[in-house]
Amino acid sequence: MPVSPATDSAVRIAPSILAADFSALDRAVRQATAAGADAIHVDVMDGCFVPEISFGRGMVEALRGHTHLPMDVHLMVADPQRHIAPFARSGASAITVHAEAFGETGLLRAALQEIKGAGASAGVALKPATPVSAIDGVWDSLDRILVMTVEPGYAGQPFLEGMVPKIATVVAEGRRRQREVVIGVDGGIDEGNARVCVGAGATWLVAGSSVYSSRRPVIEGMQALRRALGQT
Image: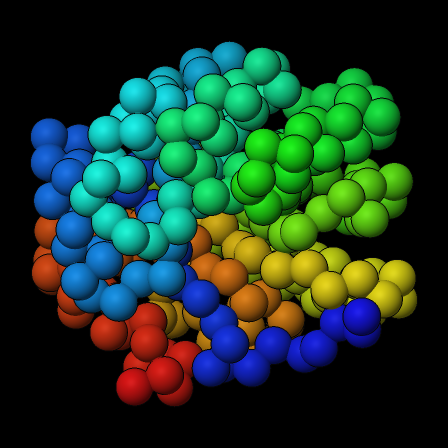
């Protein structure tokens, strides 16, 4: 099917619990659910692919009982294929791996097929410096593409405006290939740049610090994003 341009009403928001209070993640998930989130984004970091260490499959399994929303797992790990089946069993609805974690296209393709075989949506994330051509050989295995708008590994980084043309490039390439995939953005997303990302073609916004902020409740952060998108 051809790729359709994003409309504000079609855009989904997935709060990232990496920016939430780690001592009360169950509450953070419930708050995002009550505030109208479309999914819960879980950044899994191994201290190897990125410097920090975050959540394991046990956390996904524990939080699964606190929401009916999809659990959107983002594997920022050096050996992602080893973790696909365990996270799928733990309740991940979608699993995104990094293109940079694979030495060759065949291995990336195999990982995406394994994700689908486990019953989850399959995605690929691209670091800011990684060209869109890095996924040339796997478009037919993709459900989603996640354009990183910060360097992965830390919450609270500023949005990289230079990634907006990359979003448009991904959309154009999908249209050229007649592949309908979810186009996501992750990193520094807030009410000041959400509309720009959507204008470039993004349909899935991962938002961390703009939702889980000490300056306002979760519901206000979600409402601010929805207002910026004209959804309220």
